[in-house]
Length: 296
Ligand SMILES: [Mn+2]
Image 1 (cartoon, rainbow, N blue to C red):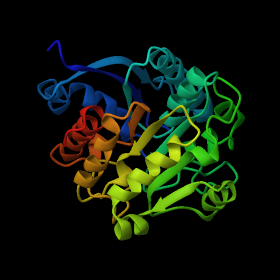
Image 2 (cartoon, rainbow, N blue to C red):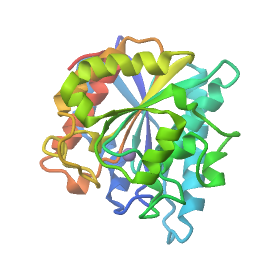
Image 3 (tube, protein in one colour):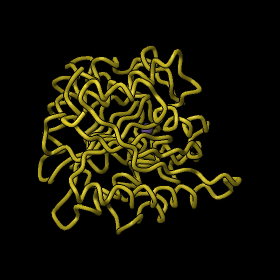
Image 4 (cartoon, helix red, strand yellow):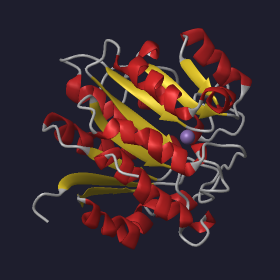
């Protein structure tokens, strides 16, 4: 349809940075999804422009592989940002964020800083010093803030990619003490799940958008599937009870659809092997509709 809004999609088919590797298949399932294809009826024309894959050989050096994947993703993102094309990254493990937002910050760095809303059950702000599992998918936000392995922190250009005052987290309900200390020390705004239950996601999202728009030239949103309640969206690796209702998240995201400050979005940690009856897959299509055209 000629009047449809063109939406560029990039897949990050990696699961090696998590405890389980099933999320590597998430982008492929979305690429084939009839629910995603049916967005053309809603006025969205999805166009896949990249699919970054983990090399098939035995992943002996995960850090080197993640660095390589994220470099490829960042390089795919840069021209889209420069041409002001709206895009969404579909991942895979959440290390995608290091590639996505390093690319965005590199593309706009002469003009100013970017803001980022991180919607997640976790903080993803561990460092090699504070992590209990060693899994890199628990570290991407720390890397973007300038803390972590050098190859990820300095990906594409010198760190940090994000200033702490331009970042906020929404939906946090499970975290390690070390990562909470880091975010506290950096004075990053965290909207914990309790605050969302008390005040409502609608108000929180308005505040979050204001927060990340202050002194930035635009903002992005990185959504971990585990931010949603696992009763609604079970298709993810590290489920945490008591999350955001999927329809509430959709409603809140519609605020971004007509906001010229929104640069890009990312949806990570979809594990199709843990999904039931394609329910999470359907929610992802609805999240995309909400962000792209502001419809529920
Ligand atoms: Mn995450």
